[in-house]
Image: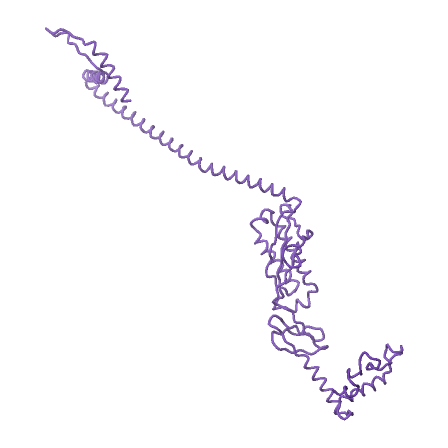
Length: 377
């Protein structure tokens, strides 16, 4: 290089580190003897150093122009930059946003006129609320109760730990760059506020059991709406509930109350099951009794109606022939009375016949009749 032959190495200002090393302003700089530097001496020394770069050791007007143009060209070439697939280029001119560029080789005015910021718009970042994880990211290092304790709609306190996973909005990265000074702090505050709002509208039992998925979804929607209103340029991808439990101080009492409530529900279910079995049986028995009563009523009415009709018929015949009817009634009555009774008929007017009464057979026949009747029963 040109200065290697002039000074023996070390750079255009001479050797470094030794006693012969000099600054571009010489030994009388600001730290030399305490006096302010001489401007003319500085200019003269600068011109001397520039001559070393020009062949022949002299620099005319044309060489100076070429030098200036070369410096300007090199400066303009520094405006080229590359945007990776996971990045977006934010172009600024004099500190003011001008445009957004996609991936590939791009150009903007070099520094200090222009500037480019290339945020990563695909990286998934996580904000922890209610706890802080370990250095390895596995498990919980500690709980942050001032963030996790929240009041429910039924005036209980629940301990909620959750994460909010977010990324820069690829459609509005300039909002993220210019509107958010502390992204993690802002998103954590919005997440905590949204969770307190959602928890304050629900009872603790639903939060601990069946509505955790709906709680997370509602919190995500509220967070996204608030951040969009702020112009934060952030997308909330998912809200994950890590834990939902009663505070540790009342956890055992809460579990006891929960167990008692479950026992009450179990007993109630058993009573409803018993009722669902007994009530239909009782209704069936009542229906059967009613049907039997109705059948007996119909039978009794039919019998009474038949007897009344028969009596009217007999009475009509009796009016026509009282003697014959009276004799017929007598005979039919005697037939019904003596039809099932053992009878011994003795003809008192018989001539030449000795009356005989078999007394020894009468008890036997009576006993056999009684036995037959018992067997029939």
